[in-house]
Image 1: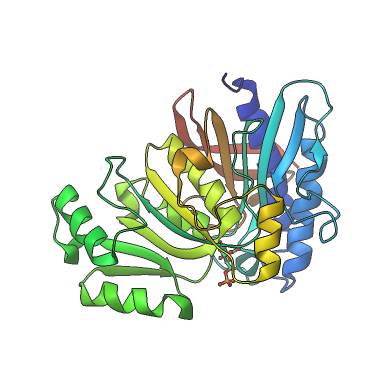
Image 2: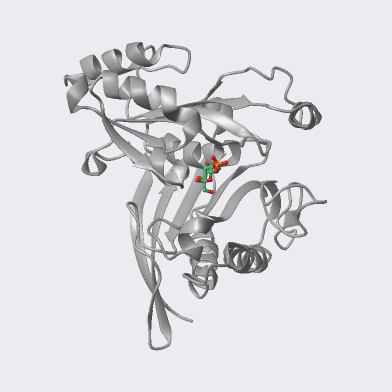
Amino acid sequence: MILDKKFENLFLNVCNRAALSSHYLVGKNDKIAADKAAVDSMRSELNKIDMKGKIVIGEGELDEAPMLYIGEKVGTNKGPLLDIAVDPLEGTNFAAQNLPGALSVICVAQKSNLLNAPETYMNKISVNCTEPNVVDLDYSLKKNIYNLAEYKNKKPENLTACILDRPRHLETINELKKLKVNLRLITDGDISGALLVTNEKYGVDIFLGIGGGPEGVLAASALDAFDCNFQGRFLFNTEKDKNRAKKMGIKDLNKKYSINEIVSGDSIFCATGVTSGDLVSGIEIENDDFISETLITHKSTNMKKIIKTRQKI
Ligand code: VTB
């Protein structure tokens, strides 16, 4: 089963509108308001689409998020059964402080084809190489770097690794330095970070480290369309996290997920720039129009491109 091509434009529009709504709050130092604007817009646009949609990754559970909560039904209730993952404003700090890299992100697949990731951390790795046994979450960092260097016919000192700049990564960062790997430290936004391996022009050979689990699922769906590899393993720090994961049907809490255990079958992914960043430019307003840039992928049609649109506000 594949997702009808018409959904490309429909979800592109959902993402564009969410990004526009957040745009008005860029630089206002209020990340909650900027997020809420994107959430409200995304929800009302999703509800116009003919589908039986279900949010599988959203703003949290019903008790913590009144809108786009996990399990919420969206759409007109006519049409295909779809699972939807959303991150209406990825990089709320970026938007609040008018820094590069804020995005509105959505991904859709047929029912049961997206991993229902709990809101917890995930250890992730992505590379532009689908050959098995080159890079693996279970290998040591040194082995991954040496294998990747050999695969790419480069020296470790000519590789670049992207990782969130966090104290929890200090050991990894120090080891990368020892291996002479170049670093691309990001302050936030690891969906974008993971996608920097998709094209040589971004100059990133490997993305790794611990970030949000939901963000991992969203990144995996685009990486799948780009024929890149991704692996993830959830990290559960508290008993509450562990119980919640069990309730969500996760039996093996230590499981390493391969990309096709995270996203299977067909999927459409859209990421629209709120502020300009590595992947796409941010929203621009010109008179009564808004201009947006969206990275869109559709696995079955082999679509992976950046679409610039100009629409009436
Ligand atoms: C992660 C990352 C996101 O926030 O969730 C991060 O996946 C939060 O990490 O892309 P910390 O708890 O270490 O701050 C983002 O960077 C932005 O939402």
